[in-house]
Image 1 (spheres, rainbow, N blue to C red):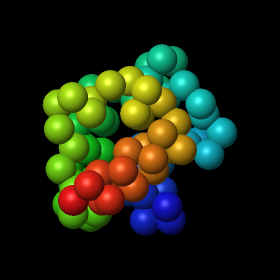
Image 2: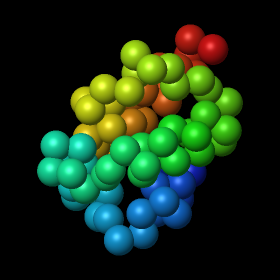
Image 3: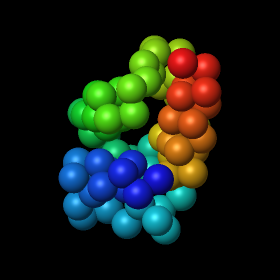
Image 4: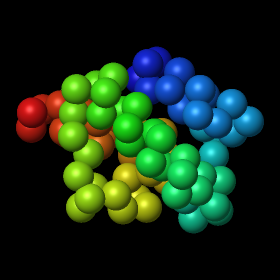
Length: 76
């Protein structure tokens, strides 16, 4: 999870990812942020986040993002 946090902080150093629980719902992250995050996750974690995974739920919290990464690594 530490690597994921470094990626997120690199994309948006102004966001308190640990405490923000509605990153998408509160429009903290925009579509460009999500594209950048997905690209970084795919490259750094050797996964492939597909279009069907691009649901707000999967990116609203760091826990949801980590769950998605873990699930995709297990499937891979």
